[in-house]
Amino acid sequence: MVLKLVIAIMLLVVMLITIKNKKVYEQFIATYKNDITLPVIAPFAFTIIDKLNLYKRMPKLMNSIHQKMIILRGSRLSGDYTKIYAAKIITIMFLFIFFTLAAVEASDEGYSNLLYGFLLLVIITFFLVKDLDKKVKQRKDSIIIELPEFVNKIILLVNAGETVQGAIKKSVEQNKHNIYESPLYFELNEAVNKMSANTSFQEVMKDLNYRCGIQEVSIFTTTVMMNYRKGGTLLVQSLKELSVSLWDKRKTVTRIKGEEASSKLVFPIIFIFAAVLLIVIYPAIAIF
Image 1: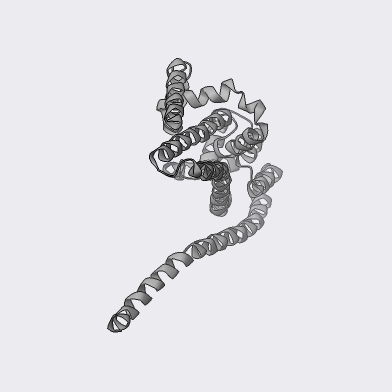
Image 2 (image 1 turned 90 degrees about the vertical axis):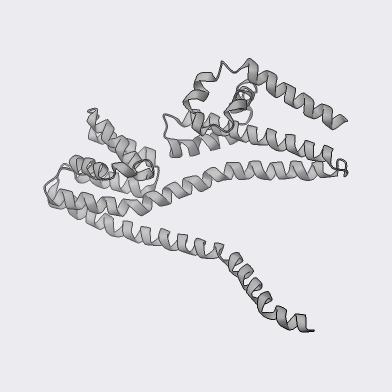
């Protein structure tokens, strides 16, 4: 009876907060609808963030999310996506608590499973935060894998008499279809847009380095900045030397990914082996 009352109060509070603050966050939700978890109750989660001032009460967690969002979404949108991800965590926590209470109420085991439920909630919350680390790593690996090919294109185009700026623009134009699937070319497209808006090349390269946030891109932008005015042989030679190290880095990342993929296959292989073994020995067991 107590749990039913708690569940009813939870639902009532969520409904009231959602209805009361729907118009406050209406424009924000409409803008980021595809990225928000359960937009229907999103005003509730956003209200919790703002009213409880989680940015000040939980600075370590919010700053950690924000730093990762700068890498994943860029500095311009990082604040909005930090709020969206925090709202996602709150929404999942609420749904988990609600269904845990409902399951305990429906079962005959009393409150003994509540502790396990809340322990599982802590674990889920931890993995939601850690999932951002995984996405950051995937983005970094993707850039490292694509960067050597991009540098080789720049070398070929500069050797053919193209300027560095022109070579970058042509490389991006050749990969227009792949911009939103490729973190590297997405950032390069942003750089090209800034060059088209008459932003100085030095500022564009600094911004590209900042937005990518990895050492390999930093080395590339530094190499280009140091040699692009000289152009010709010196720039091409510097980029060729960089290309060798980038290909080595790519081989390392690819090898690590292969090892990770093979390790994930261990348990399915064991399961298949056990199934085949059972099929083979079952006739002999059935005879006895």
